[in-house]
Length: 121
Image (tube, rainbow, N blue to C red):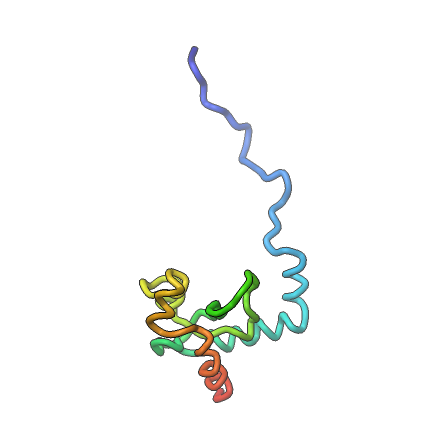
């Protein structure tokens, strides 16, 4: 018996539209607290990397060391990291949290430095 390939009459479509942002997150982003957090992260992204001093723009990294639970830290608990120290490099924090900690210490120790740099501006 000869098998024939499946044929489609048109492009694939989802039965229900995929929601890009949850209603809860959309409500938070629209709130005054959400707007203040987003504004703070823009200021953090304008700082140089707190590890190597690479020029901006930086990534705003939410601190993850010494935290318990699965909730993301506040938008006000962010530090500026270049891409190599944040996600792409061999010593990037998201490529190995423990290895990064051994090389540079806990990420939350850079929060004071970030606050001082923002106060200077």
